[in-house]
Length: 118
Length: 114
Picture 1 (tube, rainbow over the protein chains, first blue to last red):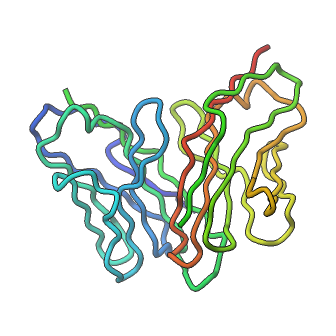
Picture 2: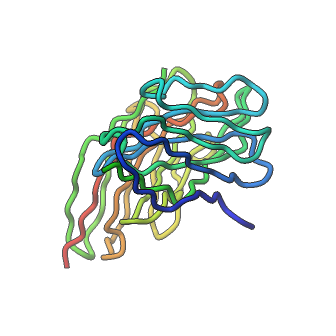
């Protein structure tokens, strides 16, 4: 079946502009995650959605960053007034995000959106 | 709390020699542990995972990892490196009581010399 898809694959923008990144998770996955990966660095957690629960926004670096998810489907990550330090690859992942001690639900990652802020 | 430490940021081996990528974890609960691989300009791919069954886990491409609770380690090994193994490897611990939220290590870049 189809994996996690993200669009656009590449985005070049000017400093100060707003950008919107899209993620389509695997159908049936209740959990959706956004990560940021700067050049040569590891993954930085941004935000996490699980079903109808309030999202975990603890990783968002500033109030310029926000994300929404419609039900258990598409999510958009919005960065307002972009800065050069926002340049990175933004990765989305989805999983069967269960709790209560059930373990081993791997995350499936999309190919990422490479954002370049000039 | 959960966290992961990957002890080496870079590892270099010769083709045909063994690979060892080290990972130590900290978890308040009995953890699930994963290794992911990221090839240049490619997405993250799951190599293997530990979920409390057998402590020696076999993954794709000849990789395996052993869960050692007493050492809080989950090191990744491969008997014989191949040029195509050159990539970045991430160790991950998840919290089963918080919707399996992932905590990533900082990554280890594996270089394979001919």
